[in-house]
Image (cartoon, rainbow over all chains, first blue to last red; front, top):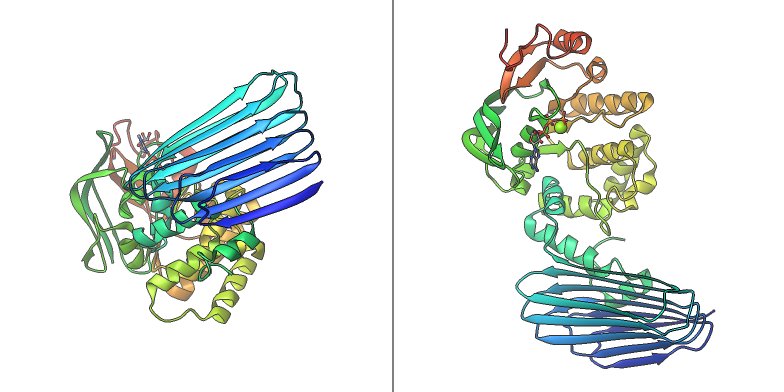
Length: 190
Length: 250
Ligand SMILES: Nc1ncnc2c1ncn2[C@@H]1O[C@H](COP(=O)(O)OP(=O)(O)OP(=O)(O)O)[C@@H](O)[C@H]1O
Ligand SMILES: [Mg+2]
Protein backbone atom coordinates (compact mmCIF):
# COMPACT_ATOMS: atom_id res chain seq x y z
CA UNK A 1 0.00 0.00 0.00
CA UNK A 2 1.19 3.51 -0.78
CA UNK A 3 1.19 5.47 2.44
CA UNK A 4 0.82 9.19 2.63
CA UNK A 5 0.96 11.16 5.89
CA UNK A 6 -0.30 14.71 6.16
CA UNK A 7 0.66 16.53 9.35
CA UNK A 8 -1.01 19.89 9.92
CA UNK A 9 -0.73 22.29 12.82
CA UNK A 10 -3.19 25.15 13.28
CA UNK A 11 -4.81 24.31 9.97
CA UNK A 12 -7.34 26.85 8.72
CA UNK A 13 -7.89 25.55 5.19
CA UNK A 14 -10.43 23.13 3.84
CA UNK A 15 -8.99 19.87 2.56
CA UNK A 16 -10.10 17.42 -0.09
CA UNK A 17 -8.50 14.11 -0.96
CA UNK A 18 -9.42 11.46 -3.49
CA UNK A 19 -7.66 8.18 -2.83
CA UNK A 20 -6.46 5.83 -5.53
CA UNK A 21 -6.87 2.10 -5.08
CA UNK A 22 -4.34 0.61 -2.65
CA UNK A 23 -3.58 3.95 -1.07
CA UNK A 24 -3.35 4.79 2.59
CA UNK A 25 -3.80 8.31 3.88
CA UNK A 26 -3.18 9.46 7.42
CA UNK A 27 -4.18 13.01 8.30
CA UNK A 28 -3.00 14.36 11.64
CA UNK A 29 -4.31 17.75 12.63
CA UNK A 30 -3.73 19.67 15.82
CA UNK A 31 -5.31 23.07 16.22
CA UNK A 32 -4.58 25.30 19.17
CA UNK A 33 -7.77 27.04 18.13
CA UNK A 34 -10.30 25.38 15.85
CA UNK A 35 -11.28 27.11 12.62
CA UNK A 36 -14.38 26.38 10.54
CA UNK A 37 -13.13 24.04 7.83
CA UNK A 38 -14.39 21.23 5.61
CA UNK A 39 -12.48 18.03 5.23
CA UNK A 40 -13.55 15.64 2.53
CA UNK A 41 -12.17 12.27 1.52
CA UNK A 42 -13.31 9.99 -1.28
CA UNK A 43 -12.31 6.35 -1.41
CA UNK A 44 -12.73 3.84 -4.24
CA UNK A 45 -11.33 0.37 -3.56
CA UNK A 46 -8.84 -1.13 -1.09
CA UNK A 47 -7.91 2.10 0.59
CA UNK A 48 -7.35 3.26 4.12
CA UNK A 49 -8.11 6.66 5.64
CA UNK A 50 -7.26 7.67 9.19
CA UNK A 51 -8.07 11.17 10.37
CA UNK A 52 -6.73 12.16 13.77
CA UNK A 53 -7.99 15.62 14.61
CA UNK A 54 -7.62 17.31 17.97
CA UNK A 55 -7.44 20.70 19.55
CA UNK A 56 -9.09 23.48 21.48
CA UNK A 57 -12.41 25.09 20.65
CA UNK A 58 -12.18 28.77 21.53
CA UNK A 59 -14.58 30.50 19.18
CA UNK A 60 -17.84 29.59 17.47
CA UNK A 61 -16.82 27.15 14.76
CA UNK A 62 -18.29 24.47 12.56
CA UNK A 63 -16.12 21.67 11.30
CA UNK A 64 -17.50 19.38 8.61
CA UNK A 65 -15.74 16.10 8.06
CA UNK A 66 -17.10 14.03 5.21
CA UNK A 67 -15.97 10.58 4.23
CA UNK A 68 -17.29 9.11 1.00
CA UNK A 69 -16.82 5.44 0.38
CA UNK A 70 -17.70 4.53 -3.19
CA UNK A 71 -16.22 1.05 -3.69
CA UNK A 72 -15.19 -2.07 -1.78
CA UNK A 73 -12.80 -3.06 0.96
CA UNK A 74 -12.00 0.35 2.40
CA UNK A 75 -11.31 1.51 5.93
CA UNK A 76 -12.28 4.92 7.20
CA UNK A 77 -11.36 5.92 10.73
CA UNK A 78 -12.01 9.31 12.27
CA UNK A 79 -10.70 10.15 15.74
CA UNK A 80 -11.72 13.58 16.93
CA UNK A 81 -10.82 15.15 20.29
CA UNK A 82 -11.89 18.59 21.40
CA UNK A 83 -11.52 20.61 24.56
CA UNK A 84 -14.09 23.39 24.62
CA UNK A 85 -12.54 26.41 26.27
CA UNK A 86 -15.03 29.06 25.17
CA UNK A 87 -18.02 29.59 22.89
CA UNK A 88 -19.59 26.81 20.84
CA UNK A 89 -18.07 24.23 18.56
CA UNK A 90 -20.02 22.05 16.16
CA UNK A 91 -18.63 19.01 14.45
CA UNK A 92 -20.60 17.37 11.67
CA UNK A 93 -18.96 14.08 10.91
CA UNK A 94 -20.63 12.29 8.06
CA UNK A 95 -19.64 9.06 6.39
CA UNK A 96 -21.45 7.79 3.33
CA UNK A 97 -21.06 4.27 2.09
CA UNK A 98 -22.50 3.53 -1.33
CA UNK A 99 -25.05 0.88 -2.09
CA UNK A 100 -23.89 -2.43 -3.59
CA UNK A 101 -20.51 -2.15 -1.91
CA UNK A 102 -18.98 -4.67 0.47
CA UNK A 103 -16.21 -5.27 3.02
CA UNK A 104 -15.94 -1.66 4.09
CA UNK A 105 -15.23 -0.66 7.67
CA UNK A 106 -15.95 2.78 9.08
CA UNK A 107 -15.39 4.08 12.60
CA UNK A 108 -16.11 7.51 13.98
CA UNK A 109 -14.90 8.24 17.49
CA UNK A 110 -15.55 11.76 18.80
CA UNK A 111 -14.71 12.79 22.33
CA UNK A 112 -15.09 16.18 23.92
CA UNK A 113 -14.22 17.78 27.24
CA UNK A 114 -16.03 20.90 28.36
CA UNK A 115 -14.27 23.70 30.19
CA UNK A 116 -16.12 26.99 29.67
CA UNK A 117 -17.38 26.23 26.19
CA UNK A 118 -19.94 23.90 24.66
CA UNK A 119 -19.78 21.29 21.93
CA UNK A 120 -22.16 19.61 19.59
CA UNK A 121 -21.12 16.41 17.85
CA UNK A 122 -23.18 15.11 14.96
CA UNK A 123 -21.83 11.78 13.81
CA UNK A 124 -23.87 10.63 10.83
CA UNK A 125 -23.54 7.34 9.07
CA UNK A 126 -25.29 7.27 5.70
CA UNK A 127 -25.06 3.68 4.78
CA UNK A 128 -26.87 2.15 1.84
CA UNK A 129 -25.59 -1.37 2.24
CA UNK A 130 -25.69 -4.04 4.93
CA UNK A 131 -22.29 -5.39 3.92
CA UNK A 132 -20.41 -2.94 6.10
CA UNK A 133 -18.92 -2.74 9.57
CA UNK A 134 -19.78 0.63 11.02
CA UNK A 135 -19.37 2.06 14.51
CA UNK A 136 -19.71 5.50 15.91
CA UNK A 137 -19.11 6.97 19.33
CA UNK A 138 -19.64 10.49 20.55
CA UNK A 139 -19.02 11.40 24.18
CA UNK A 140 -18.84 14.79 25.81
CA UNK A 141 -17.91 15.21 29.45
CA UNK A 142 -15.48 16.62 31.97
CA UNK A 143 -12.07 15.56 33.18
CA UNK A 144 -12.60 12.18 34.87
CA UNK A 145 -12.89 12.66 38.65
CA UNK A 146 -11.17 9.35 39.39
CA UNK A 147 -8.16 10.32 37.34
CA UNK A 148 -7.98 13.76 38.91
CA UNK A 149 -8.17 12.20 42.38
CA UNK A 150 -5.53 9.60 41.53
CA UNK A 151 -3.04 12.17 40.27
CA UNK A 152 -3.64 14.38 43.29
CA UNK A 153 -2.95 11.49 45.65
CA UNK A 154 0.55 11.57 44.21
CA UNK A 155 0.97 15.16 45.37
CA UNK A 156 0.17 16.71 42.01
CA UNK A 157 -1.93 19.87 42.25
CA UNK A 158 -5.30 19.93 40.55
CA UNK A 159 -4.02 22.45 38.05
CA UNK A 160 -1.07 20.27 37.05
CA UNK A 161 -3.27 17.16 37.02
CA UNK A 162 -5.58 18.85 34.52
CA UNK A 163 -2.58 19.79 32.39
CA UNK A 164 -1.49 16.18 32.33
CA UNK A 165 -4.95 14.90 31.43
CA UNK A 166 -5.39 17.60 28.81
CA UNK A 167 -2.18 16.62 27.11
CA UNK A 168 -2.97 12.91 27.09
CA UNK A 169 -6.50 13.54 25.83
CA UNK A 170 -5.39 15.66 22.89
CA UNK A 171 -2.17 13.91 21.96
CA UNK A 172 -2.79 10.25 22.58
CA UNK A 173 -3.92 10.00 18.95
CA UNK A 174 -0.63 11.04 17.44
CA UNK A 175 2.65 9.33 16.67
CA UNK A 176 6.01 10.48 18.03
CA UNK A 177 6.97 12.25 14.86
CA UNK A 178 3.94 14.51 14.80
CA UNK A 179 4.26 15.13 18.53
CA UNK A 180 7.77 16.41 17.95
CA UNK A 181 6.41 18.88 15.43
CA UNK A 182 3.69 20.05 17.75
CA UNK A 183 6.28 20.74 20.37
CA UNK A 184 3.60 21.11 23.05
CA UNK A 185 4.84 18.48 25.45
CA UNK A 186 8.53 19.08 24.97
CA UNK A 187 9.48 19.67 28.57
CA UNK A 188 7.56 16.57 29.61
CA UNK A 189 8.43 12.94 29.05
CA UNK A 190 11.67 11.76 27.36
CA UNK B 1 1.33 11.22 64.79
CA UNK B 2 -1.82 10.45 62.83
CA UNK B 3 -5.07 11.02 64.69
CA UNK B 4 -8.67 10.54 63.63
CA UNK B 5 -11.30 11.84 66.04
CA UNK B 6 -14.99 11.03 65.98
CA UNK B 7 -15.24 10.96 62.23
CA UNK B 8 -18.75 10.61 60.85
CA UNK B 9 -19.07 10.23 57.11
CA UNK B 10 -21.70 9.51 54.53
CA UNK B 11 -21.94 8.40 50.96
CA UNK B 12 -25.19 9.17 49.19
CA UNK B 13 -26.93 9.72 52.53
CA UNK B 14 -25.75 6.38 53.86
CA UNK B 15 -23.76 6.60 57.08
CA UNK B 16 -20.53 4.65 56.68
CA UNK B 17 -18.38 5.95 59.52
CA UNK B 18 -19.95 6.76 62.85
CA UNK B 19 -17.79 8.58 65.40
CA UNK B 20 -14.75 6.67 64.14
CA UNK B 21 -11.49 7.27 66.02
CA UNK B 22 -7.97 5.95 65.53
CA UNK B 23 -4.50 7.02 66.69
CA UNK B 24 -1.33 5.91 64.96
CA UNK B 25 2.00 6.92 66.49
CA UNK B 26 4.92 7.58 64.21
CA UNK B 27 6.43 4.39 62.89
CA UNK B 28 3.60 2.14 64.04
CA UNK B 29 1.86 -0.41 61.84
CA UNK B 30 -1.89 -0.77 62.28
CA UNK B 31 -4.14 -3.23 60.50
CA UNK B 32 -7.86 -2.80 59.99
CA UNK B 33 -10.06 -5.79 59.26
CA UNK B 34 -13.78 -6.03 58.76
CA UNK B 35 -16.53 -7.45 56.63
CA UNK B 36 -17.03 -6.58 52.98
CA UNK B 37 -18.78 -3.28 52.54
CA UNK B 38 -18.23 -2.17 56.14
CA UNK B 39 -16.32 1.00 55.21
CA UNK B 40 -12.61 0.21 55.16
CA UNK B 41 -11.94 1.65 51.71
CA UNK B 42 -14.22 4.56 52.55
CA UNK B 43 -11.98 5.41 55.50
CA UNK B 44 -8.85 5.23 53.34
CA UNK B 45 -10.32 7.50 50.68
CA UNK B 46 -11.75 10.00 53.14
CA UNK B 47 -8.29 10.48 54.63
CA UNK B 48 -7.20 11.69 51.16
CA UNK B 49 -10.40 13.74 50.77
CA UNK B 50 -12.03 11.78 47.96
CA UNK B 51 -14.82 14.09 46.74
CA UNK B 52 -17.39 11.26 46.69
CA UNK B 53 -17.75 11.24 50.46
CA UNK B 54 -19.31 13.72 52.78
CA UNK B 55 -17.82 14.18 56.21
CA UNK B 56 -20.29 15.56 58.72
CA UNK B 57 -18.27 15.55 61.94
CA UNK B 58 -14.82 14.87 63.31
CA UNK B 59 -11.22 15.71 62.57
CA UNK B 60 -8.11 14.18 61.07
CA UNK B 61 -4.75 15.43 62.28
CA UNK B 62 -1.37 14.56 60.86
CA UNK B 63 1.71 15.82 62.65
CA UNK B 64 -0.47 18.32 64.44
CA UNK B 65 -1.99 19.73 61.24
CA UNK B 66 -5.67 19.48 60.54
CA UNK B 67 -5.85 17.79 57.15
CA UNK B 68 -9.57 17.03 56.99
CA UNK B 69 -11.08 18.63 53.91
CA UNK B 70 -7.74 19.91 52.61
CA UNK B 71 -7.19 19.47 48.87
CA UNK B 72 -6.03 15.93 48.14
CA UNK B 73 -2.66 16.98 46.78
CA UNK B 74 -1.90 18.97 49.92
CA UNK B 75 -2.63 15.93 52.06
CA UNK B 76 -0.32 13.92 49.81
CA UNK B 77 2.34 16.59 50.17
CA UNK B 78 2.10 16.23 53.95
CA UNK B 79 3.43 12.73 53.34
CA UNK B 80 0.34 10.53 53.26
CA UNK B 81 0.08 8.10 50.38
CA UNK B 82 -2.83 5.84 49.57
CA UNK B 83 -2.49 2.71 47.50
CA UNK B 84 -6.06 1.89 46.71
CA UNK B 85 -7.73 -1.47 46.50
CA UNK B 86 -8.13 -1.21 42.73
CA UNK B 87 -5.60 1.23 41.33
CA UNK B 88 -7.02 2.85 38.20
CA UNK B 89 -5.30 3.14 34.85
CA UNK B 90 -4.75 6.36 32.93
CA UNK B 91 -4.34 6.26 29.19
CA UNK B 92 -1.70 8.41 27.63
CA UNK B 93 0.06 9.27 30.89
CA UNK B 94 3.23 7.40 31.83
CA UNK B 95 4.47 6.51 35.31
CA UNK B 96 7.55 8.54 34.50
CA UNK B 97 5.46 11.63 33.80
CA UNK B 98 3.42 11.26 37.00
CA UNK B 99 6.48 10.81 39.17
CA UNK B 100 8.45 13.62 37.57
CA UNK B 101 5.55 16.01 37.90
CA UNK B 102 4.99 14.98 41.50
CA UNK B 103 8.66 15.42 42.38
CA UNK B 104 8.82 18.75 40.62
CA UNK B 105 5.91 19.98 42.70
CA UNK B 106 7.37 18.62 45.90
CA UNK B 107 10.64 20.43 45.63
CA UNK B 108 11.78 23.44 43.70
CA UNK B 109 15.18 21.84 43.17
CA UNK B 110 15.90 20.25 39.83
CA UNK B 111 15.45 16.52 39.73
CA UNK B 112 18.70 14.60 39.72
CA UNK B 113 17.91 12.37 36.77
CA UNK B 114 20.72 9.97 37.51
CA UNK B 115 19.59 9.41 41.08
CA UNK B 116 15.93 9.24 39.99
CA UNK B 117 16.60 6.57 37.36
CA UNK B 118 18.74 4.57 39.76
CA UNK B 119 16.04 4.64 42.44
CA UNK B 120 13.41 3.51 39.95
CA UNK B 121 15.56 0.65 38.71
CA UNK B 122 16.43 -0.46 42.24
CA UNK B 123 12.78 -0.38 43.27
CA UNK B 124 11.77 -2.41 40.19
CA UNK B 125 14.40 -4.97 41.01
CA UNK B 126 13.22 -5.29 44.61
CA UNK B 127 9.60 -5.53 43.46
CA UNK B 128 10.48 -8.01 40.73
CA UNK B 129 8.76 -5.64 38.33
CA UNK B 130 9.91 -5.26 34.73
CA UNK B 131 11.64 -1.83 34.50
CA UNK B 132 9.73 -1.30 31.25
CA UNK B 133 6.80 -0.28 33.46
CA UNK B 134 8.58 2.99 34.24
CA UNK B 135 7.86 4.26 30.73
CA UNK B 136 4.48 2.61 30.35
CA UNK B 137 1.14 4.34 30.69
CA UNK B 138 -0.14 4.23 34.27
CA UNK B 139 -1.53 0.74 34.83
CA UNK B 140 -2.89 0.47 31.27
CA UNK B 141 -3.16 -3.20 30.45
CA UNK B 142 -1.49 -4.10 33.76
CA UNK B 143 -2.71 -7.04 35.82
CA UNK B 144 -4.05 -6.61 39.35
CA UNK B 145 -0.76 -7.71 40.88
CA UNK B 146 1.33 -5.55 38.57
CA UNK B 147 -0.74 -2.52 39.50
CA UNK B 148 0.02 -3.01 43.19
CA UNK B 149 3.72 -3.20 42.40
CA UNK B 150 3.57 -0.10 40.21
CA UNK B 151 1.96 1.80 43.09
CA UNK B 152 4.74 0.67 45.42
CA UNK B 153 7.23 1.87 42.82
CA UNK B 154 5.56 5.27 43.12
CA UNK B 155 5.96 5.05 46.90
CA UNK B 156 9.67 4.29 46.54
CA UNK B 157 10.11 7.53 44.61
CA UNK B 158 7.67 9.79 46.44
CA UNK B 159 8.76 8.60 49.89
CA UNK B 160 5.63 9.08 51.98
CA UNK B 161 5.92 9.18 55.76
CA UNK B 162 2.62 7.37 56.06
CA UNK B 163 1.44 4.57 53.81
CA UNK B 164 -2.18 3.53 53.56
CA UNK B 165 -2.42 0.13 51.92
CA UNK B 166 -5.95 -0.89 51.00
CA UNK B 167 -5.82 -4.63 50.35
CA UNK B 168 -2.35 -4.51 48.91
CA UNK B 169 -2.41 -8.32 49.04
CA UNK B 170 -5.47 -8.76 46.83
CA UNK B 171 -4.55 -10.01 43.39
CA UNK B 172 -1.05 -11.07 44.45
CA UNK B 173 0.13 -14.63 44.00
CA UNK B 174 1.90 -16.42 46.88
CA UNK B 175 5.37 -15.39 45.75
CA UNK B 176 4.34 -11.82 44.97
CA UNK B 177 2.93 -11.41 48.49
CA UNK B 178 6.35 -12.21 49.91
CA UNK B 179 8.09 -9.86 47.50
CA UNK B 180 5.68 -7.03 48.28
CA UNK B 181 5.80 -7.63 52.04
CA UNK B 182 9.61 -7.61 52.00
CA UNK B 183 9.54 -4.37 50.06
CA UNK B 184 7.17 -2.76 52.56
CA UNK B 185 9.15 -4.04 55.55
CA UNK B 186 12.39 -2.66 54.09
CA UNK B 187 10.73 0.66 53.35
CA UNK B 188 9.39 0.79 56.90
CA UNK B 189 12.82 0.03 58.34
CA UNK B 190 14.56 2.60 56.15
CA UNK B 191 12.13 5.45 56.61
CA UNK B 192 10.38 4.76 59.92
CA UNK B 193 7.07 5.49 58.20
CA UNK B 194 3.69 4.73 59.73
CA UNK B 195 1.51 2.18 57.98
CA UNK B 196 -2.22 1.57 57.91
CA UNK B 197 -3.02 -1.79 56.35
CA UNK B 198 -6.46 -2.94 55.31
CA UNK B 199 -6.59 -6.65 54.70
CA UNK B 200 -8.84 -9.70 54.84
CA UNK B 201 -5.99 -12.12 55.28
CA UNK B 202 -3.81 -13.06 58.20
CA UNK B 203 -1.13 -14.15 55.76
CA UNK B 204 -0.05 -10.60 54.94
CA UNK B 205 0.21 -9.88 58.66
CA UNK B 206 2.46 -12.93 59.05
CA UNK B 207 4.94 -11.06 56.90
CA UNK B 208 4.27 -7.48 57.98
CA UNK B 209 3.85 -7.64 61.73
CA UNK B 210 1.38 -4.99 62.89
CA UNK B 211 1.53 -3.34 66.31
CA UNK B 212 -2.25 -3.38 66.46
CA UNK B 213 -5.12 -5.07 64.66
CA UNK B 214 -8.51 -3.34 64.73
CA UNK B 215 -11.93 -4.55 63.74
CA UNK B 216 -14.20 -2.07 62.01
CA UNK B 217 -17.90 -2.61 62.42
CA UNK B 218 -20.93 -0.35 62.61
CA UNK B 219 -18.83 2.63 61.54
CA UNK B 220 -16.23 2.43 64.28
CA UNK B 221 -13.49 0.29 65.74
CA UNK B 222 -15.15 -2.27 67.98
CA UNK B 223 -12.16 -4.29 68.99
CA UNK B 224 -8.40 -3.80 69.08
CA UNK B 225 -5.83 -6.47 69.65
CA UNK B 226 -2.50 -7.62 68.43
CA UNK B 227 -1.60 -9.99 65.66
CA UNK B 228 -3.54 -12.81 67.35
CA UNK B 229 -6.81 -11.03 66.65
CA UNK B 230 -6.16 -11.60 62.93
CA UNK B 231 -5.63 -15.29 63.63
CA UNK B 232 -8.89 -15.42 65.53
CA UNK B 233 -10.77 -13.80 62.65
CA UNK B 234 -9.17 -16.08 60.13
CA UNK B 235 -10.25 -19.17 62.05
CA UNK B 236 -13.69 -18.15 63.29
CA UNK B 237 -14.82 -15.18 61.18
CA UNK B 238 -16.38 -11.88 62.25
CA UNK B 239 -19.66 -13.39 63.38
CA UNK B 240 -18.12 -15.56 66.07
CA UNK B 241 -17.48 -14.43 69.62
CA UNK B 242 -15.51 -11.43 68.44
CA UNK B 243 -18.38 -9.13 67.60
CA UNK B 244 -22.08 -9.67 67.48
CA UNK B 245 -24.40 -8.96 64.56
CA UNK B 246 -24.93 -5.31 65.49
CA UNK B 247 -21.25 -4.76 65.35
CA UNK B 248 -20.94 -4.23 69.07
CA UNK B 249 -18.04 -5.73 70.88
CA UNK B 250 -19.00 -8.52 73.25
N1 LIG C 1 -19.36 5.49 45.15
C1 LIG C 1 -20.24 4.86 45.96
N2 LIG C 1 -21.58 5.06 45.79
C2 LIG C 1 -22.47 4.45 46.59
N3 LIG C 1 -22.14 3.64 47.60
C3 LIG C 1 -20.85 3.40 47.82
C4 LIG C 1 -19.83 3.99 47.01
N4 LIG C 1 -18.62 3.59 47.47
C5 LIG C 1 -18.89 2.77 48.50
N5 LIG C 1 -20.20 2.65 48.72
C6 LIG C 1 -20.86 1.84 49.78
O1 LIG C 1 -20.25 2.17 51.00
C7 LIG C 1 -20.11 0.99 51.80
C8 LIG C 1 -18.68 0.86 52.25
O2 LIG C 1 -17.88 0.51 51.14
P1 LIG C 1 -16.32 0.26 51.24
O3 LIG C 1 -15.79 0.19 49.88
O4 LIG C 1 -15.73 1.26 52.15
O5 LIG C 1 -16.26 -1.18 51.94
P2 LIG C 1 -15.01 -2.07 52.34
O6 LIG C 1 -15.05 -2.28 53.82
O7 LIG C 1 -13.77 -1.51 51.78
O8 LIG C 1 -15.37 -3.45 51.64
P3 LIG C 1 -14.44 -4.56 50.91
O9 LIG C 1 -13.87 -5.43 51.99
O10 LIG C 1 -15.39 -5.32 50.07
O11 LIG C 1 -13.40 -3.85 50.13
C9 LIG C 1 -20.60 -0.14 50.95
O12 LIG C 1 -21.93 -0.46 51.38
C10 LIG C 1 -20.61 0.37 49.56
O13 LIG C 1 -21.59 -0.22 48.79
MG1 LIG D 1 -12.49 -2.09 50.32
